[in-house]
Image (tube, rainbow, N blue to C red; front, side, top):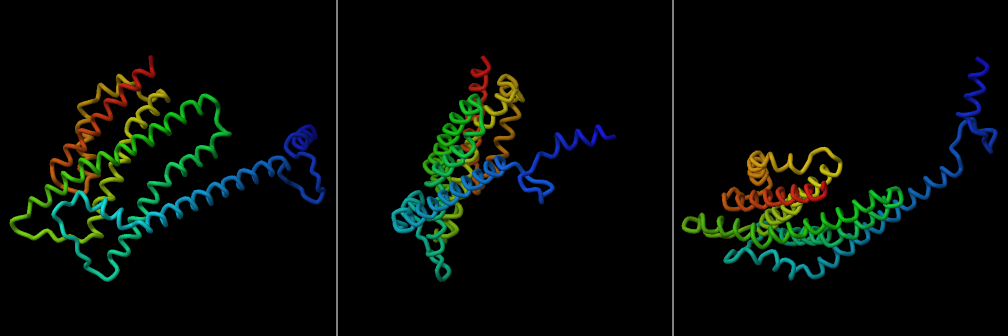
Length: 258
């Protein structure tokens, strides 16, 4: 019994500088923890400042950005159905664009924060994955803006052109565009997820390709969920893009396995 007590005193309770405190954390550990908290708060404040600055910059030139969002809606006249609708829609557009513009800097700050705690192998994998994920997100935004949005709007405009006059609420129109663009950008992260699963050894590249029949069904379902429009053309385009990305991601995993 005495031997156990001596062992506990020696190994579990370190000598303390303050004899009045029965249990404390080592000063080095406190200093390291405080440095991590300080660094996190600094990077968080810096990221928020970048986001606010980008949002304000977008709001000062909101008319040009609004024209950019209106461009795909050819022949549509937008109306304001409530007081201040356009003003609040402008704030949402500025915030949306501010997030898109500042996101690379914010992701870079996160990368710098977690970098010291990673091994060289993890850093060699994380850096290309982060860059690839950002590029795929940008490609997804452009694909949605130049292909999905025009096709969806053309379908809606032509569908009821002989019955109703196309007068739309700008706020609802922006919500439609923002959801379609953002969800498309997120859906283009499929290859990144595949590569992570392949590097972790959870699923092999050949196994990914062997289930292509199920992927077609899943891609169609996902396309129907993430696209706010119900027209079949937009869903087919989205499903085709997801299937192409999946096949491309599987091919990259197979190359990495060799």
